[in-house]
Image (cartoon, rainbow, N blue to C red; front, side, top):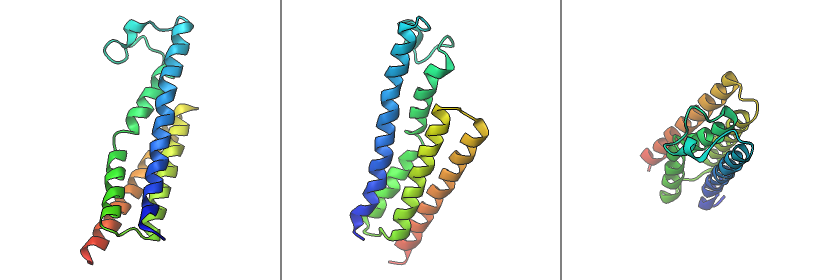
Length: 140
């Protein structure tokens, strides 16, 4: 396994983030053409007049830019220190899979309990990735 293997899960999460980003204008324009929203509804973010199905992609996008920042930092730290091993790469892919599942739930049927479970599980995996990296770093 090469050290660059840790970069692929990061590419996967970045791809998911860009896909969700594209959903925002799609849903907003669709709602505007249907007369559900006006441009003014987005002047200061999203007003209370914006329907949930229009605001959810934006909220999911924000989720993908919050705690995943620590995932990208961890991935770069693992790569920069040359400590990528199969277990770290596996953890990174599990994290990406859980975040993708979280987005899928959020953007489709939006069951809060299912979303919370996936969100919490992804955060546990991210914590384990950080601990695994710090442990490997301490053994150097």
